[in-house]
Every structure is written in C-alpha cells, then in structure tokens.
Image (tube, rainbow, N blue to C red):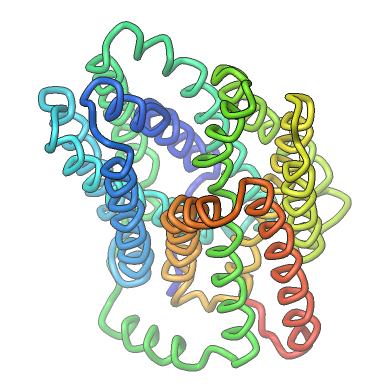
Length: 395
C-alpha cells in the first residue's frame, strides 16, 4: 500500500512539539506522586508499569491501524485523546485519578509515536537514515527544552505543567491538521487483500532478523532503564546530591542533539545502519562497564557520555533497519513493534533491576548489564552474518 509523502520538516516539527509537551509530564511523575500525594514507592512503580503497558498496547495498535486505516485521522484522534487527558489532569490530578489519567496518556503517547514513526516510512524522496536521524534529533530537542523548563514550572504550580502541556498539544493538533494532509487516505478493499497477501510472504530471513531486533530492543531498554530508575538511588547512596544526577540527563539530551547533527552531516559520506547499530551497542556496554566501578561524579559523567553516544547512534538506525526489512504493507505494524519493544523493556527494567540489587548489589547489576549487552551484540552479529545475503529490502 502506498501513501503520499509528508514533508519531513512538518513531521519533525510535530514530533518536537509532542515530546516537548510530554517532557512536562514524565520527569516529575514520581516526585509529584511521592512528595505531594504521599504515595508509596511500590505503588508508584505499579503506576509507571501500567503507563508502560498501555504504551505498548497503544504502540502496537497505532502501528497496525496505520497500515489498514487513515493515518491522518488516526493521528488526529490520538492527539485529541492526549489533549483531553491533559485537560482532565489540569482539573483533577489527585489520587487515584492521576494514575488512571497517566495510564490513558501512556496509551495515547504510544499510539502517537508509532503513527509518527510509521509516517516517516512514507517519505521516499530522502534516504531513510537521514529521515530517522532527523526525527530522532527533533524528538530529543523537544526533550532538552522540556526538561530544562519543567523544574521551574513545577516550583510555581503542578497545574501550570498540565496547562502548558495542553496548550502545546493544541499547537500539535493544529500543525497536524494543516500539514499532515498527504497522509489523509483511506485504503480500498483490494488493498486489504494485497496487505494480507504480502504480509504472509515475508521472507524467513527478514522475519528472523526482525524478531532478533525486537528482542534485542527489549533487553537493551531493560538495562538502559537502570539509569532512569536505580542509578539515582545509587548516586545518592554514595553521597552525591540529586541535582548532579539531574544534570546527567541534561547532558544526555543535549549530547543527543549534538551527535545527531554530526551524524546527519556524516550521512553524506557513509550509509551503513548495521555498523552504526553495533557501534552504539558497544558504547552502551562500555557505559555500564564504567558505571560498575564508578565512585566519583566524573565517572558517572563519562558513563553518561558513553550512554548518550550509544543510544544516539544505535536507536534511530534500528528503526531504519526495521523499515528496510518490512514490506510496504506492514511498515506501520513494524514501527509500532519497535516502540512497543522499547516500552516493554522500560516496563520491566525497574522491576528486574530492583530484584537484582536486593539479591546482590548495584555494581553487580551493572556488570550483568555489560554481559547482557555483549550477548546482544553477538546475537545481532551472528544473525546478520547468517542471513544478510538472504534478506529482501523494501526501502
């Protein structure tokens, strides 16, 4: 099934606004629940798990429906849903409604991200490496701006955060309504038949590599999530102030923007997603190797720089590889599975990490992460080596 091509600048602008808006919600969720609503850490963990699980459902549903429905209307519906939840949060953000709204927001967010990434696959007049790198750049630019402002707005009023996010999603809705019209198409019955025919004839080599990439994403994000959940506690146990941990994420988001700018320049001279993914995975492993021996703040800074380099090089290229290996009839579903796999890893990360820490220690968890990343690297190298000459590309 073919679609008209949306302009990358508008797709990236929408992604920037979306991530900017969501950056006013997720960074302070745990702090708000614990400090202002006095919710236990265990309950907060359940709330965040539900948010991730609904995100998985939204990602898969959005991706599948992209292939079979009208992407323009589906995305408008998802953004409208997010906007309505943000308006509800503005007026009602006590317990337990906050947890309910957050679960709905997780579904809508997963839906919107999957549709955005799937829409990127319809851009055929530009190299897919450049498309996904630029999209990743603008998404992280939104995160940089959001995380830089969220603390100041939170100090004024939690309600102001929800109002600001809602206003941004009004802007997002307007941008999509006016500039995403090339996606406004409805598949015909014969296209559904063609879809079913093509989707059942995915080459075995493609299927094996795709499953390997999806499984790798779950594992990679499971370990990556230790940075977002358990590293902060480890640093404070070492006597480092929380503000220094927060600065690491500012460094992360800023570094991703810089690295993506450099990578977009280098795309003119090289075009090998496989090598970029493997390089990124090696950097992620090195990040946890440094983290395992970290006792002073400079070690955490070095580890974060390696983590940033790893995710900025590997993650967008995984989307590129999935796009290249997926038939046109199921590109939406495949991009939905990319986001769903990442969400699954994020959901499991805090639970697995917490269990390992309670049974052993923080450094042992980080050493396990190094071993796990090395196993993923070997798995990806072996799988690509065995099947690379048998795959069919659809880029």
